[in-house]
Image 1 (cartoon, rainbow, N blue to C red):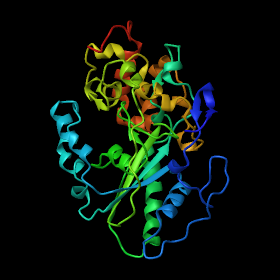
Image 2 (image 1 turned 60 degrees about the vertical axis):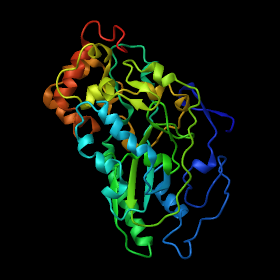
Image 3 (image 1 turned 180 degrees about the vertical axis):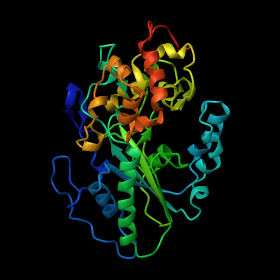
Image 4 (image 1 turned 90 degrees about the vertical axis):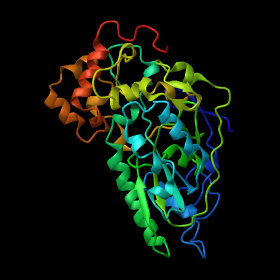
Length: 364
């Protein structure tokens, strides 16, 4: 690990580990920008080199790219136990698709490799844990800009088009961004993008965990990367910081208690006493990522699509609450916040603005 580097917001980070970086066009470069190799040519006898694939992924806007084999990873099987414990809450689609989520060949029978992709969405705004104003609404960082589904789907389509043009043989493929029956964090870990932290997020030692994950399943035989190695050590900050005790163990989330599930996925009233813990969180919650040392000074994305829309850029609870339903519906269009809808956002605002919110111990 390299020496600490100063980053935005006065936090600290660590120098990048070169092996974790997607090579830029023009050759692989070290952290100081010096060229370490020339651009890599097409590999004789193969479809295309993984390095050229990763270079093109970077050009399209992906920050991380790795390759995993289409194997029966042991971690995939834990989903059945997780569902049996009832941790999925009302997300019944997870049980309906469990067979596919634990078997990549059930998604694409001819699959041999998975191209795993990570896109940094971190923005230069304070963490919710740094905000002292109780009247400021808290919105998950990923949801303040444009809908990531449309953006990343378009970029994956361009990458897949490049793969088809470069391949010396036809192949089958399916691409997903949080939309298909694939356990993305498990695949990303085995593609070398990082490890699954105790907060159940994929953590990369260079960019942290502020990542959109996506993947391309394909029938090509591509050389796999080495799996990510757990670097959480003895740290338990995320487990201790969760306001509702939703992290019931390392990397084990009881979604029924999670503020993200409660404010986004849950339909109907917020259950007591968890409603009291919503505080200013009107869409999602980032606390378990904000307290993570690997996110103490992550890089910030300059991509315009992830920058906050003015209406979602540190808004006041009162301002959002004062908007008409039609106005809210208009600003939610083209945003990931559409998932909760106007009714869900109204419910969350009511919980956030009621007297005594955030009081009491809900970790039970």
